[in-house]
Image 1: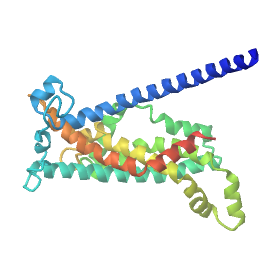
Image 2 (image 1 turned 180 degrees about the vertical axis):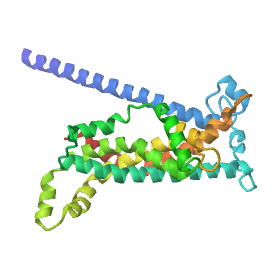
Image 3 (image 1 turned 180 degrees about the horizontal axis):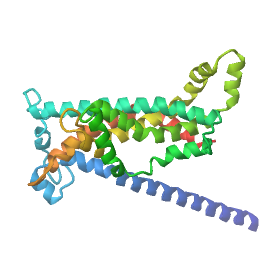
Image 4 (image 1 turned 60 degrees about the horizontal axis):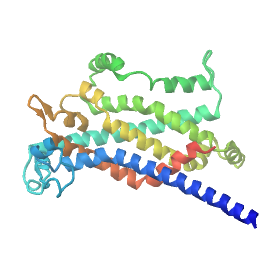
Length: 304
């Protein structure tokens, strides 16, 4: 009888510990989610505020303040102005199109080149002087350590001599170089997680190296490629420093337009918030649509 009560007490302690751990984990996740989502909530709500609401720090719509379309009117996207001619709206769509073309093109190019480089590093042995595969991989990753400001003057002089200033092509090439190390890092882990026996079997069946890569390896590594593409897209879409430095009129992107809302008379928070909300919306839609591939890609790179 004493043994039965003792087992019951042990079971209660185990259950209590389990529930305590679960509550602590979920509470931590909720707090972290709130911290991550609050800037987005603040940005969206601020786009519907007036100046006094911003200064007072009002947060909750219809409770602390009545939403207004002033921020969206400043960029010509309010319901009242959507059918009228607006130079500001035309300027916004021009910057939006520049960001879209540059970000997607650079991300696709980086994924293609990075996947090929990562596949070679994961399947073949190279040697350039004293450098082997591990040294080459570290060389690519080391490019992420270099501060962008160090490259500002060299790129400015180079692009001026090549006639690439204020051009989409110039930004695409630069952004591709910027995100290429990240793509190589992600895809190298992806390819290393794929058994080489699958490719050997494909070679035995008559496929060449390219056939095995395109028909066997790529479908398996597709989630990782999508994850690398999304990460590259976010980095290119949000990049400000080089866009502000190397463009002036034709190829200016959305981050530069958002930053231009600061002036000598202060920051137009409602206009900046409206622009920021419109800028992050495409990324949110892409993330929702490709969520399945992002999770699969990250999980495949983590599980060995």
